[in-house]
Length: 602
Image (tube, rainbow, N blue to C red; front, side, top):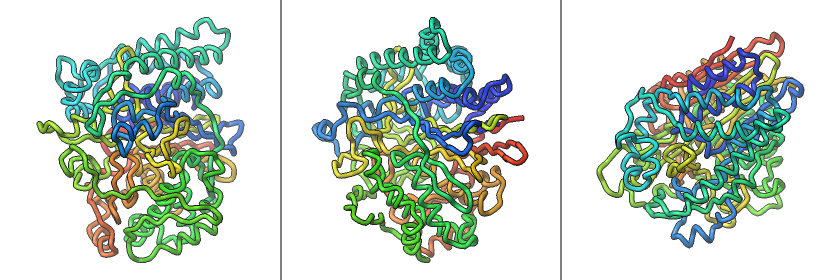
């Protein structure tokens, strides 16, 4: 079974399963297809995280860490010397070392069965022969077309044939990227084993991408702050990176084990929210009621406050997760939830540890862009809660955000389970087409994950060479009695775990089927500093789908929530696959919003 955010990726991965490949062959094939068909949501220059178990070790969830670190030249001093107080939201200064491709190839080498050529054939085919352009890709291009024309000519050459935005449904190709993948496959042609061939391909990828990136981004280009800056990413940074595996961080909830990334991602915040909520009666855990929605929103605020103060990628011992996820700590946090909505950022204290400083709390951010025109920021209105990278509507104003690359970005998702019991949940992201200029000779651009770091040495999420930014990418695996039963995830930036929390409560407590849980009305809080530039917050903010109901929404407002209505079908991009260990029955579910996600299997 496969569930993903694009029907072509689902179909490609399912094709691998039909031809005898396992879940790891299938997820890698689907992921490389996502790079091609959802270029506004992810790309080869981006990053990914995954959580999986193998049929041989079903009770031992592992994390695939495809999040690259900050480059050697990405120092706080360098950014401050450029007049910056935040890492930009677009441009090469926001780029971490690309980690996605190496991670996928590592997973294929160690747990797959197919050759690299067979796995990449799907993506190469769609890149060389073409695929129909999504309406949302066309819309994104329309919003950044002036930026491309005026400041990013390599992106204009890549995405604006004859100077115009291609219409939805236009068959588009990426021959540069197809050629690169062909060359990477060819690099392993003389190897004597499948594993050696994949390692040779990994080396070829690092060498070719590193050289092209260092040469191209030595020239300054427009960033989201409105200034022109050169990048700091070098060939040595890229050639020195290798993806890795880690043990998953886990917590229990109502008899289930939930597996997430470590505190270099936001995943433990979902675990923290579950531990807080576990002490409430079931009637307080239904997000479709006023009481349940309020309780969930308040628990999320507390979990996110700890994320923003304690999480980061220093030495593992520096993030006190064992305490932050403990029963006693959760009980103390639970006691802070009252009948009224909090409008404060309330991180907790850890005994014997000084509490790191809270991030700067801004409800707005002064830029060259018109007030309220940044998507998802206060005054952004229509963009509130959108789960994909979003850009402002086109305008002729010379200082408008599409001329600076101001965007809020996000990602894709894919889940796969096979007949043997291998199961994987993965969230590829970054390197979306509006992140930075397209690199000539590669056919793609770099990501912007460094915008999730702070230019504050005292923060656990401080920009630091060699450390990973505290990513929002957060796939989930659910186990029961030592066996995997659900793999799930969602695009959505800061909303990813919030929407997954709704799913888990509805399935594990409310008895919903996975598809019913995905279809149900969604909501999330914005009452914490956003992970994406310009990192503003809305004290007491709650974004809800209108389908939640007028009476419930009015009740939330009476409790003090600052509610934004997002529309009937606007929030959440979840997909999931399921497995019943007792019967062997497999299932899948996908998001209907946007008519793009797809689940398949047989």
